[in-house]
Length: 242
Image 1 (cartoon, rainbow, N blue to C red):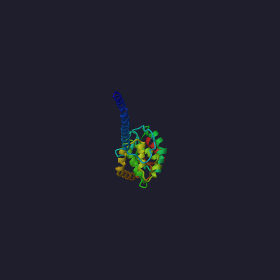
Image 2 (tube, one colour):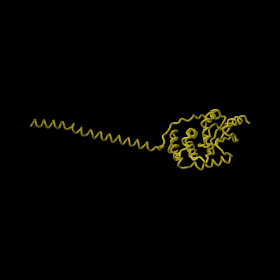
Image 3 (cartoon, rainbow, N blue to C red):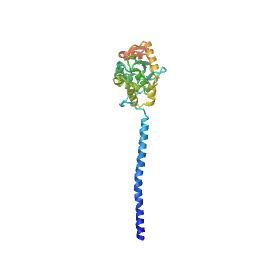
Image 4 (cartoon, rainbow, N blue to C red):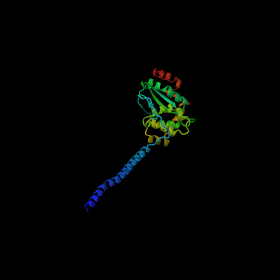
């Protein structure tokens, strides 16, 4: 009888490890479920941020070393308010000649005259009706401007003008540019989808025509209209009081 009890005791002593081994897989199953739920939550949160259907290509805009903002009429400016010369560019983001000025002349002009405090530079929208993507591009620049990055979007749009100007579905490209500049995409997308800039841009176009502007880019130097080829000479004359 004692031997029988000993066997029973030993069997009972071995029973605990067997029960432990049954519980261990349950622990790992619960752990796996917790991990899966955590991953799902992370994916859900990431997907809440709107994404563009276009790959984001990094872009580093030029540094801006002067005050920026918008005029009372809503046009973006850079440069000191007390600069002796005011230059207004009547421009179209889809205009090849505007693109040539922006990519070939603007950086030097800005460094020489705007950074030095001699010129306050204003961009006046003049989206031409023959350019299908001009209004959307101008709206994207204004939407970026609401987040303090008009001039960064201005530079990016002209740097990649050939790419987006030929697109039949330009909005995803513009969204990718917003991502490249680190903009709040929700606010940017809402600004574009609301079309709130469309009547403003149409009014700007009409103002340009009323001013006598019939081509882009056209520049106004202290009230006198000039073209890109004579811009610097006109600025020098204005600085000299001529």
